[in-house]
Amino acid sequence: MTIVVYIPTILRSLTNEQKRVEADGTNVLAIIDDLERQYPGIKPRLMLHDKLHRFINLYVNDNDIRFSGELETKVKSDDTIMILPAVAGG
Amino acid sequence: MLNLRSDLVEAMFQQAKQDYPIEACGLIAGCIGSNRPTRLIRMCNAAQSATEFYFDSSEQLQVWKTMEARGEEPLVIYHSHTKSSAYPSWEDVEYATEPNMHYVIISNDPHCQPALRSFRIQKGIIVEEAIKVLNFANTPAQTSTPITSSSCIKELP
Image 1 (tube, one colour):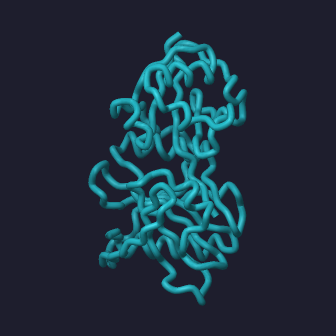
Image 2 (cartoon, rainbow over the protein chains, first blue to last red):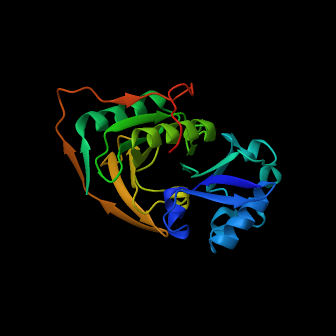
């Protein structure tokens, strides 16, 4: 199924400057894999060692997936995914 | 160079003082493409730490949506160092993923001067930039406290 994904500024060079793209999949990992097929190079910017990169926040319908099912979080039609750079430091 | 209104500078120092001994953090938004930071948004330091900070992810999402709806983008990300100089730590550098961002640091330590510095950080390379403080004495800072309601959030375009 097709899911709308909002891309942050920092990754738009990989999506032909599009901030709103579509991807197919039934969970977040499948969506990321489909994004990688369409926009090569985006997956390593989102994931490290099979986990969501700590520099990235990813939300399904406004819910941070770190507090739900991580990359296994299910998605369905009409869901939206938002990706933001995490802001942190010391 | 970072041009920053004096009321926004004052607001950052006030927050750093109020939040002490916790690191203060937040951002200043401006119209997309303007490179003119105008709206200061105080963020809660979810780490509640004197040595680190991170934006609460839910709060960040709401703030980013509001900026999107207003035609704004984050231009400055700021935080305080409570006991060290206003220079990026290695964690600051690690998380500095936006090459066009002005990363501003405020030091609470009176022995560390200057207390306000701004940096561009790209691929681990730190470049300090000058800050030009613009006189804005007669207008109060346009600030926003953390958003707790989604009622003001418009649909994304």
